[in-house]
Length: 156
Image (tube, rainbow, N blue to C red; front, side, top):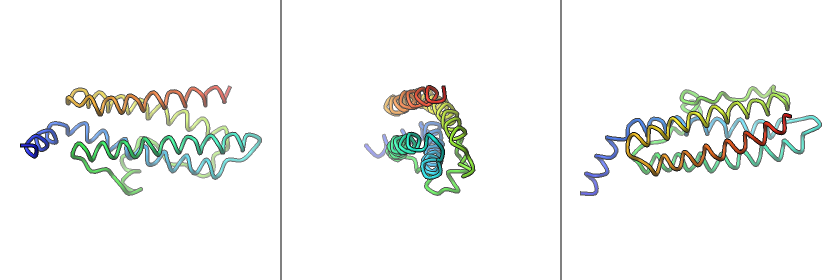
């Protein structure tokens, strides 16, 4: 009986699984982008931004893992190659040529885009009667909004 229920659920949550996989991809690309910024930031705000980017990639790491694990729990398979992530991601990778101001602006834009995508994924989960997934994604939106707000204040 449990297998039938699991199979039935997997067949009814296709959109949620698709949306979660897109978020896995975006979070994976964002994780690498934040590492690039952490490693490559220079200028008078070096120390502040170096530390902040590390804080942000640590936070994104937790979201990345939680999203992939939730996807597996509901019968999906997370994208796990950089090529695959880049093909699904809404987030664009770093160029390694960004200056500090561009890095901060880019992260603000990425967090805004990702929060919007997570809201869409949460809506899909709600429509497919998966409140646990919707709740996880909504919590991530809250975290991204807070980080974005702080970076916007840093920009002035």
